[in-house]
Amino acid sequence: MADKEGYVAGFPSEIIKEGKVQVLVPKLEAYGVVPSDYAPSKAPVFYNPVMEFNRDLTVLAFKAFQHMVNHEISICEPFTSQGIRGIRFAVEVDGVTKVLLSDINTAAYELAKHNVELNKLEDKITLKHKDANCVLSNNASPKKRFDIIDIDPFGTPVPYLDSAFRALRNNGLLATTATDLAPLCGVHAKACVRKYGGKPLRTEYCHELAVRLLAGCMASLAAKHDIGIRILFSHSSDHYIRVYAQIEYGAKKGDESLKNTGYILHCFNCLHRETAHQIFGKSDQCPECDSKMEHAGPLWIGGISDPSFIEHVMKENQNTAFKNSAKITKLLTLTKNEATAPATYYVIDKLSGKLKLPAPSVQAFLTALHNSGFQAVQTHFNTRGIKTDAPALMMHKLLRDIVAPQH
Ligand SMILES: C[S@@+](CC[C@H](N)C(=O)[O-])C[C@H]1O[C@@H](n2cnc3c(N)ncnc32)[C@H](O)[C@@H]1O
Ligand SMILES: [Zn+2]
Image (tube, rainbow, N blue to C red; front, side, top):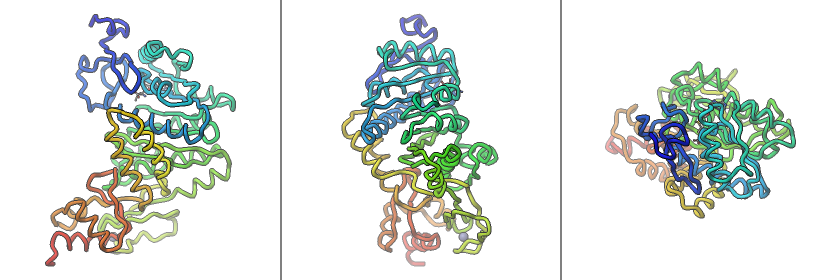
């Protein structure tokens, strides 16, 4: 490939526009990458166009956060790849005075350098060619710390969380992605216990458990540094989960956030589930059907999104025209509605499969629940999922009433 852009990067590449910036990225067709691929491709530098949604949403969340704290902010993105995410923060988030980017990969560092210059951001962005933990540790002294750190690695973010907490200012925001859903969703349970310090469970709501395992792990790592966390927003999309947590310095804050950790007990026979702060000495007998329950955790059992923060993000979304604006509105609406609903959700098809009955529509089930006086909302985790305070055996009864009223 000998066009100008390809020559600059030293490999097949093209200029793309995203948000308010233009960056040079690997030309994915030259590497046989299909758009939905997330795994590191054969391209010398990682670039995933599908993650534009994640980057758009992050820009909006950071804008909302900056407006909330209402002062100038600094941001660190130590897994920057071609630089697109950090360059967008520098250009699109208000009040940003300083952005520090880094990537350990030489080709990524070179490409990010080119892109910082292409956008004339040399004054605002500092670029490093270093390991993320090293960059974060070098900025852990009080005067160097950041207001926002975005951890966007391959797989698990856990090995970088300790240094991230040390490099965050009081009341700062830690946003982190995890793509290792096989451990988090219980396919590789041992890896999850090893990395996140909590046991996963292969249930229909394993994506929510994944968010809760990551959030719980964040709380326990933060507590070691006498830091508490407040989960402002989290979601599961495509092949990854994402958690946004605001931190607060103080041993008491650490103690308080640990009060939001515990366990989720699940009955694989009747699908009953419950949260518990402690399981030692507690009966594992299902209160609905007497079967033995399994547990997931320790994990975060508190709220996994703050409705008022989501409202701020919604406002930012209304004032911005992104390619993904409609998709973002949908996600924000669902996450806001479910923010105050109980932990876990029922997937209608799982329930109907269990009872060997046809599956009704989500709307029919929601109506039946509302008519019976229960809280019931849809969840962003699963298009066929319902969060409700109805007990499992009530869910069985309502399903039978809807699909087979004669029985
Ligand atoms: C998922 S990509 C980042 C994508 C980018 N943030 C975006 O929005 O397009 C992960 C990047 O982390 C880099 N990386 C992997 N391990 C690293 C480490 N220990 N320190 C710094 N960078 C690392 C990889 O070279 C890769 O470019
Ligand atoms: Zn049961």
